[in-house]
Amino acid sequence: MKLFIGDQLIGPYIFPYHLTGDIYAYFLQDKLPALLKNIPLQTRQKIYYQHEGAPSHFSQVAREYLNHKFPNRWIDRGGAQNWPTRSPNLNPLDYRVWGYMKAMVYAHKVNMTEELLQQILSAARSINNAAVFHKFKSSLVT
Image (cartoon, rainbow, N blue to C red; front, side):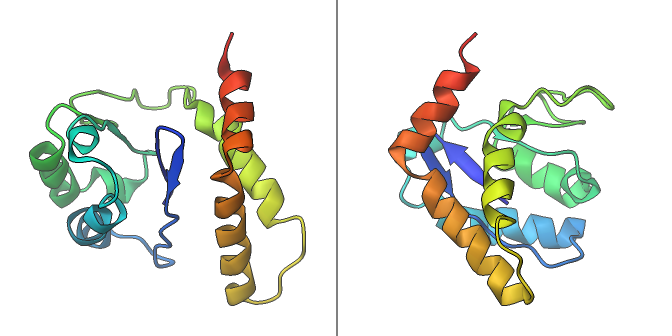
């Protein structure tokens, strides 16, 4: 899981191989607050939380928590801000940021899970570079 707030990448947070609704709800309740602890309270109170449409994101327990913690400020099917089923992915992060990160992660072949995790963390640190963020922002201006 990767989160962006302003010009900052929060995370990444690595989920277990099989993500369930209960595991995702645990992340929302117990791990997400720690990831957001350095974000000013005023900013946290205005955050819109956008999902990727995974089944675990749509679980009853996750939706209940999001309705409580992010009232009218979460985006996905069934949320107050609906993301239509089978719609084109309108998330610009998928077109620039994740593609950039994926290219960095897979630039060198890895043989072990630990190596892959290190590549992911290295790519995340690179994305937090101000010049990289400026490049992404300027590419989104039409």
